[in-house]
Image 1: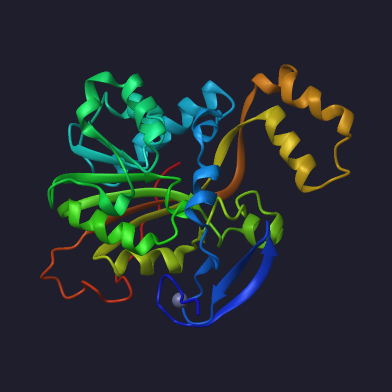
Image 2: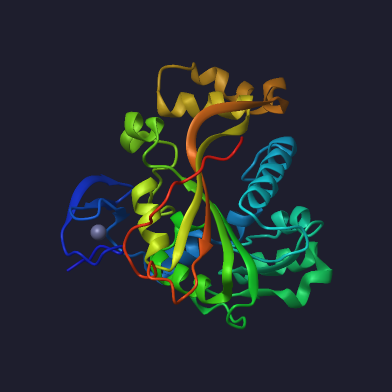
Length: 304
Ligand SMILES: [Zn+2]
């Protein structure tokens, strides 16, 4: 019997079947999750070398803008320059290239190949990069001032186990900053299974403000910042994706032009507001709020 991976309740309502898996919603806590655990073989195929080589951000400019936004977010969440930061789920190390100018960066990723690529790009950080699951990350307790997880948590089978370990690695008062698709966004609600981020089994978990607060609180973290943002996208790529979400909207003959023509070089801000940026703070272990299932206090909304 499958249990909710957030509250351990045994009843998951089926929302829909998609890509040969079932997406379910917990009747108790509302957490939306894929029901069938991918086999190690499936995971291996999903995250084969090509996954990390493929340009996630088709365009350099869009990628640089995203890096700038992440750095600004980390600053807003109270992480000072020079802090010791773990990039949990560092993939092929492109983010490290930017972040290491401002922070003492360390990295962890489940993929050996990705970590090898990250080491090649950041040779001076070689000894600070580890391959393996986040819950096995081998660093001393309380070692980090901050941990960042950019677009990672939605890929994890057991986000609670990963965050439990991350909170062990943070010093008291340390910050955990992350981004993940926002299931509570208007885009997600309107588009349902056609939402751009509804891509099981690549994505296994789908959070909104409530379930994210609960995940953090269960691991001794207090949410301090939450903001749902749009993204910078390549114009041609955006139209191409729209054409796929709404078949018939865009003439198939146009699609090649959109992917490769002059529009493929232009970057615009897409106000989809469906990516959540989250900031949180590790509470002292003696604090009564530890292991309470909800977070008290206001959540502030950071800048763009
Ligand atoms: Zn639940």
